[in-house]
Length: 129
Image (spheres, helix red, strand yellow):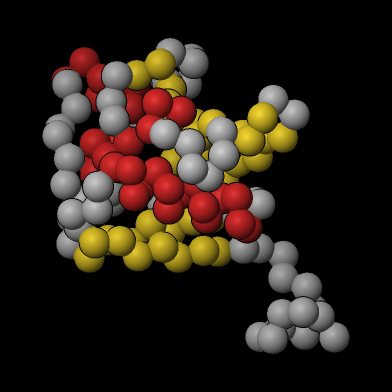
């Protein structure tokens, strides 16, 4: 009846699993997140699974309260370079932390909202676990 083989009705949610090596470099992390977000257009949840712990530099102590509810912003096309990745506090402040360090720090914590935009007219978001 519907295009989903496993369902008798159209699915209400989308869950995408991405499995990474623990030593995945930042550019690959960026491209994996962008590709998943662009291909699915609006996954509700993206589970980022790593074989072991993602490696990263621990954030500075003064960043910790701001990181707790930070949002990840990915701007531009799927092949956009890493300067189009931003981690912002709830108040919109740009935080000085790399994507790899943020994701490594965020492991085993509640989901983070990822906001994607290809251009100013097209924006969507999903939750990254």
